[in-house]
Image (cartoon, rainbow over all chains, first blue to last red):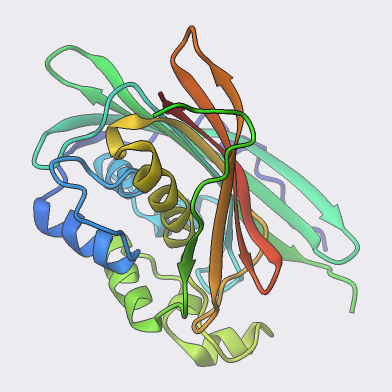
Length: 148
Length: 131
């Protein structure tokens, strides 16, 4: 039986919200990724990605649920993109909006069938409504059928 | 700093990826994927017996290399990275990069960056920095 495709997920909007990255989280992130020094007062650029997820009012499990995948099914990150208009600062409130922008089904002899879901998250300065950062992430959801 | 096409960034080496840092990352990210902290689940998926480093951590290594060289986080304009393979606990990760284009009028330089384990590319992409 073939798995259902997930084109209907395209356009799904996340609840949205606000986020401020506390200094302690930025410090621990820097430690976990062996950063040469604490990036404060600026948020480590890749932590912007998680801050955006949190501020959008979602968890990774929410995205896995939308794609009807369990966390132990071999989900992988395929691609990550960032655009910065200015550096994101710690202890500063940003508004976050975003959603699923694309879902594509692919297949390969080795990989089997898999779905690639892409979502965008925008950090916005609430005082100016200017976009500060854009994060675009693609997750790969294996669906089985790989060659043995 | 003067940016020139072909200029090589000083490489950044992670001598051995630490599985304990993966637990911190899983907690910060609230990432429920057990491949990052449970060796049994990694084995059950046929990936071996070492936990898998989170993609954001691997990308962080690359951007650490860039910002260390370019003058810090405020110099980052954009980044695009493809994840080509898993990085496991204990792996030695080598991050390298070179300047591939310079736009003097815009004040931007494009860097091609790569992270490898035992010569096997695990991440690849490009980063644009302000010059």
